[in-house]
Amino acid sequence: MALANIDAHERIDRSYRLLADVRRRRVLYALEANDEITVDRLAERLARSGVAESTERAAASLVHTHLPKLADAGVIEYEREAGLVAADDGVAVLEPFLDRPREIEPDVEQWSVADHASREVS
Image (cartoon, rainbow, N blue to C red; front, side):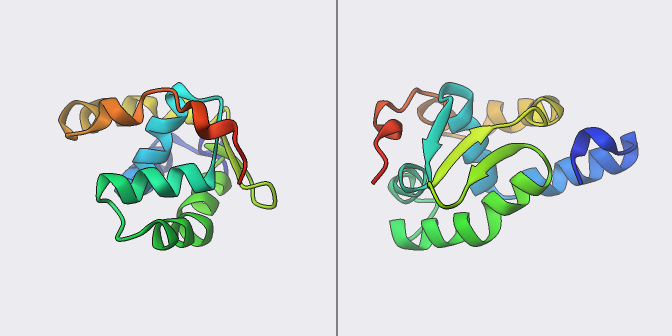
């Protein structure tokens, strides 16, 4: 169910659950600077930043867990076959909840930079 379509208390609870995992926060940070990005590029960036052990493990967790959760909440558009991720209208609901993590997470700046290679679908 989309976050925008539920009452305030439930929206707050679901928002915090969605943002409880660093991988999902990193996806949202990456989408702040990119209209769309490939799953492969997200996985590479997760592995390079040390959030995941390898690109393969990062891709598996994104595809099977994190991207579907964000898509089900109406926060992202996820084209599984094409391997593309883009922000959806529901991302605006999460913005206020991202302010504090954005201030304290150590490498947010590198995630909020446009990824010119993101348009290269591998």
